[in-house]
Image (tube, rainbow, N blue to C red; front, side):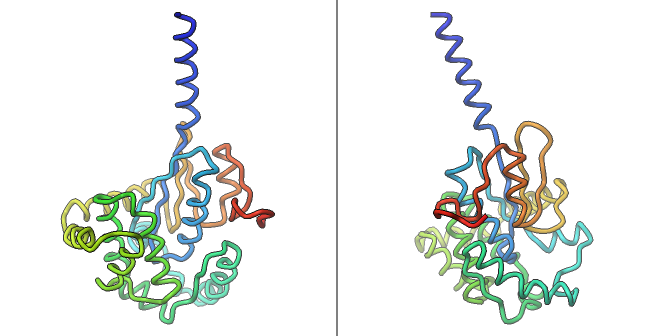
Length: 241
């Protein structure tokens, strides 16, 4: 009896150790590169034995804290990104398109409103956060819509499966201190981990947290967390590596 009990405890301990890996994914829907990383992580949810937590943050605040300059303010970088986005969209199989006015999107309108929207969803209806995030990326980086308007936010929410009553509740919650504080806390958390841009992926495997920047570090991430990388589309046969 005692031997059986000890065996059960051992198996339980091993199971806890196996499932203790966690990834914090810090993202802002204003970033198309965050979209690439987001979709890859969502595809790998059933392939990797790891818990993934989505954390909306403010890219502008992270860049300011790190002393970063917006890419479109560096001419060569801006020209490079315009070409690179389309190449990456093909590689990751994500329907990204260029926006008409990146300056207005990034530096004038910003992402405070959509990120408060997502943060309120995270607080009230967390099961819809993944779908709502994806819908907002589609609105801005596929349809070139203004994601700061209530109309666009509601449309994205409906695509994600939220009801009109739920969306009204979310809209009311966006201006409350609990929502503002959560967004600020997640943003500061990313900065404390050393983030200087997005996407920022922080892996926890029992030791010191490991920060990975960008959408191209997945082979290294997989290596460090003891999982297998089989390309950007793990469910597609003969996926590209």
